[in-house]
Length: 100
Image (cartoon, rainbow, N blue to C red):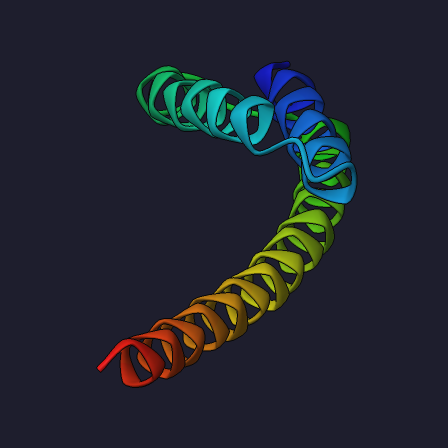
């Protein structure tokens, strides 16, 4: 079942964001999106058994939990970058005032 592959991509994204490995995160996200697209086309033609549906539900629940953590960490990273940028702008203004 391809949801296992989707979970693998999700695991890689989560590990990347936890390690602050942004390049690997982007690569993993691209692969994740490709798998979602492939899966959406393939699933339209497949009828899942009850056990397969339960497996799918469990996998999707795990993937959603991981997605939530990835998003939370990305929001925190964005806030940190915004702070850094603001600090750099203040420093540049201060340096500019001393020069003039």
